[in-house]
Amino acid sequence: MQRDKQTLKKPLGAEETDGWKMLEKKLLACLHSCCLILVALQPESQPTTSDETVVAGGTVVLKCQVEDPDDSSLQWSNPAQQTLYFGEKRALRDNRIQLERSTPNELTISISDVVLSDEGEYTCSIFTMPVRTAKALVTVLGIPQKPQIFGHEQPIDEEKIARLTCRSSGSKPAAQLRWKKGNKELKDEGTEVVEDPNGKTFTVSSRVEFRVTKEDNEAEVTCTVDHESLQNSERSTTQKLQVHYKPTAKIEPHPQYPREGEKLQLQCDGQGNPIPREFLWEKEGSDVPLQLSSDSVLIFPFLNKSDSGTYVCTATSSMGSVVAKYNLDVSDASPVPSTSSTYHAVIGGVVAVIVFLLLSLLIVLGHYLIRHKGMCIRHGEMVTSRHRQNSAEVMCTYLTHEAKGSDDAPDADTAIINAEGGQAGGDDKKEYFI
Image (tube, rainbow, N blue to C red):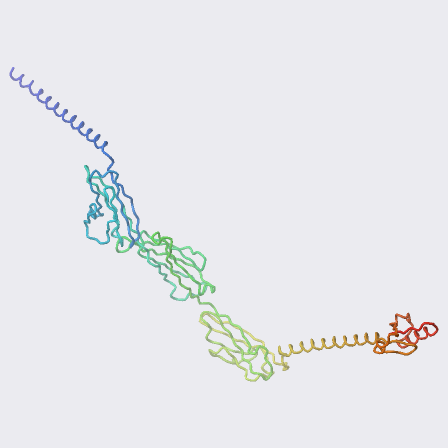
C-alpha cells in the first residue's frame, strides 16, 4: 500500500514541473512580441550611406545620415574597425581624414590622397538601443602606367613578320590594351594579365604580329591603354618601325643636254634602307669596269664622240643590288638652243609684225588723202582752199571721180578736164572744189 502511494506521487511532481516550464516559455514569447511592437513603434533611426569609387591619389567623401538620431551620436570607423570620428571629435590621428559636416542627423568626412590600402568597408554607427550600423564600400582604382612597346629595337627586313609586345603595370582592375598602325587598327594575338607583387594591381601585356613591306618603313605603331581611372583620357606610346628593303637607282646627267667638248657628270642616285654604299660603273661592250667605289658620280672631263654608248651603274647595299642604265649620244656637236635665244626670236617676230602693220596703215592713209584732195575752179582757173577763203564770190563744188559720174576717167586730172568741158557751154560759171 505504501509502495503504491510512492508510485502515484512521482508522476504528479513531473507534471507540475512541465507546467511551469510551459508557462515560462509563453511569458518569454509574449515579452519578445511586446518588445518588437515597441521597437516598431519607435521613430526611424537606421543610418544610410553609399558606396564610393575613387582614383588612387584622389579624395573620397563619406556621408552618413539618419532621420531620427534619438539623442545619439554618429560614428565612422575604417575597415580595421578603428574609429575615425565620433560626432565632431577626431579619434584617429591621420591628417588625410577631415571632418566635413557634423549635425545630429549627419556625419560627413573626407579622405584625401587615397592609396590602395584605403580600400574596404567603412562603417557608420549610431548608438541607440540596439546599436544600428550601415556599411559603405570604398573602391580604389589603380592608375595604369604609360605602356611600353618591345620588339622594335632592331630593323625588320621587308616581307618578314614583325612581333611587338605592349606592357602596362599598376592598373586596378586590369586595363585594356589596343594597337594601331598609322590610322589602321591592329588585332592583337593575345593578352596576358599578371598580379603585381603588392597583390592589388595588375600588369597587362598584349602581343601583335604582322608582315612588313617597304611602305612600313618609318610607319608609326601605337599602343593605347584604356581604363576607367583615366576619366575619358588615354595613355599611349608610339614607336616608328625601321624596315630594311632592296635599293632602287636611276642615273641623272649634269648638264641634262651634254655637248661635245663639255664636262659631264653622271649621278647614280641610289635609294633604299639602308642606302647603297657601293657603286660599280661599266660601259656596255667593254670588259673592264670604269669605276668601283663608294662615289656614285662618274665624271667625263672632256666629252668626245667616242664616249657615246650605254653606261651601267650597279648600286649595292646589304639588302641586294640594283642596275640602272643611261644612253649617252655625243655624235651631234651642235649646241642646243637656249631658252633666252628662243625668247629673243619671239620678240623680234612680234616687232616685225607691228612695223609691217604700221607701214600698211600709212600707205592706205596716204592713198586716201591723195584721192580726196580738193581745189576750186573760178572762171577756168584753179584756186586753192586758202585763196577761196579770201574771196566771198568763189563757190566751190566738190568733185570726185564718182561725183561727176566720170566712171570712164582714168584719173582725177582727166575728171577735172572733163568737168571743165562740161561747164564751158553753160551761162552760169561754177567753181568746183576737188
